Amino acid sequence: MKRLLLGLAALAAASLACAQGVTDTQVLLGQSVALSGPAEQLGKDMQLGASLYFNQVNAQGGVNGRKIVLKTLDDGYEPPRAVANTKKLIGEDKVFALFGYVGTPTSQAVLPIFTEARVPYVGAFTGAELLRNPHNRYIFNVRASYFDETEAIVQHLTAMSVDKIAVFYQNDAYGQAGLTGVERALKKRNLDVAAKATFERNTVDVKAAVDAMTKADPQAIIMIGAYKACAAFIRDMKRANKNPTFWNVSFVGSKALARELDKEGRGVQISQVVPFPWDPAVPVVKEYRRLIEAAKGEPGFGTLEGFIAAKVMVEGLRRAGRKLDRDSFIRAMETLNDYDVGGFKVTFGPGDHNGSKFVDLTIISKDQRFVR
Image (cartoon, rainbow, N blue to C red; front, side, top):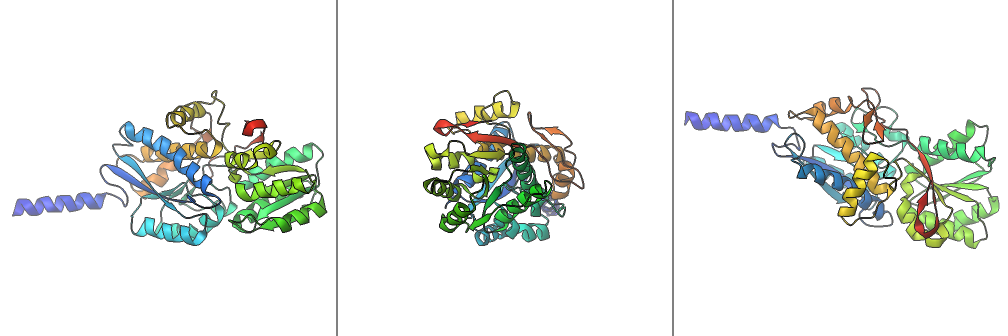
């Protein structure tokens, strides 16, 4: 009996030694993204890109002997569903960390939940300032911010003497973040936004916006939205015989936008926060291309972002060691100083969890292809 009690005590101690979401054989991560609705391709790309890398790591034995399990729930890019999913992932599924969420309004809605629960929130597909300022110990942003992206776009436009710049934006936290970025970049150059027009999230009702922009007649329009609404806006502007230069930030979903627009997409420009997915000279792109082609997938910016975020997550888990808990993971992530993912560097520190400022500018060419 004494031996049995000692055995049970040892088992209890072992179970207590494992952090939530961590067992001897696996680490459980939770993800809430759009897998349905007008923004579904964004969520599917993020999930696929991350899974490519996690699956490769698992096939090689995992991280410190543990396999990575990614549980993904569909939120349709709607904040209330993201909140319900997050409460389930943390409260019922007992995930170790949240990874690869998609969207500003969804991230804004779940921020107080994971902060109160002290759960790491890694690699979200959003450049919103609300995840960057003020500093939050549990948030790790792998990508550049919307301020970085809009600054690069405005710098490019004004260098070409384009100063009548308008903003078409989603009427929520995402759109507001992008608008603020544009206003900030223009103010540095003593300029104001020439015109503003909005649309509602998860809709393609852009008529009022098209009417407003037709009257304003700007030289360039910076668009802060997802691919379906942005495509509808561009098509309707062209039908109104208005053809300013159209610019998008990375969240639009580049490949999906090119597909939606087809031949009408030629000349549309998009800022990007990851390397060019068709440049095999970049080591992380070469690695990613090998895996996505083996999976019969199509290369693109969204899947590459998921892949890079997964590499950063894995490096943090690796550095945390076998004795893994959330505090050891956070401390380990904060040691990633100039960490080279493969031609793309990420730096975190105790007071700065914003990993990259990398921004590239691309343009849709013929046949839905991209050039730089």
